[in-house]
Amino acid sequence: MAAPLIDKIKTIIELSKDPALLRVLLSLKHSQYLVDVGWINSFKSKSPVDKNNNPIPWLTYPFIDFLSPRLKNEMIIFEFGSGNSTLFYAEKVSRVFTVEHNLGWYEKLKKIIPGSVQLHHKVLIQNGEYSHFAADSRIKFDIIIVDGEDRSNCIINSLSALKEDGVMILDDSERIEYKGAVDFLRLQPFKQIDFWGIGATVFLKKCTSVFYRKENCLGI
Image 1 (tube, rainbow, N blue to C red):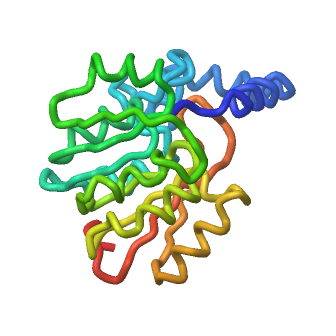
Image 2 (tube, helix red, strand yellow; image 1 turned 45 degrees about the vertical axis):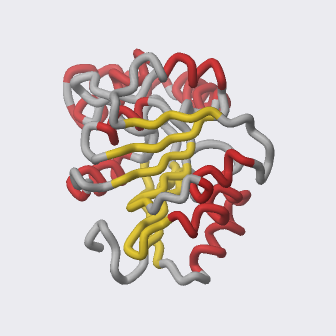
């Protein structure tokens, strides 16, 4: 899922206001954290990739570090919002189901996705088919990742699609508009772990959260 244009604009503005910071970032071109996680490559290509230009999710780097070693070959993932993250998960799990509302982006992705991915397009209507797609699939998922549109409804409507040990992941969980959905999950009850940090191409602090029960597929 592409980062909002406003985030990219904020990043450029913040960098331009602080020449010293900009010089530091430029000095990191061949070393240090931003290179190691692929941020420099991502900023140049305007696409989330690692230091070797392999696709990664547009989630916070601390969360990617947490999730990657916990993904298993037999897992089934559902993803709201498609992109480089879809390709990343497809390399690590059995199957990936993903729904995309942007028709142009859907047409582009379906030319490059591997056979283990089922990519679907749904017109975006608030609390419509898009947000119900995981539940309507009648498949139980190990992980449901909410990183697309209409996120609160996607969370609420997808709870029945989780396996008993399944986990829900919400990106940008710090946003006030998602508080209702976060409170809903806590009442189920799910526990919550927040992973704050930066993500590919943007230099703004954000949060990706994992919601899990006592028995969960990530071994938390």
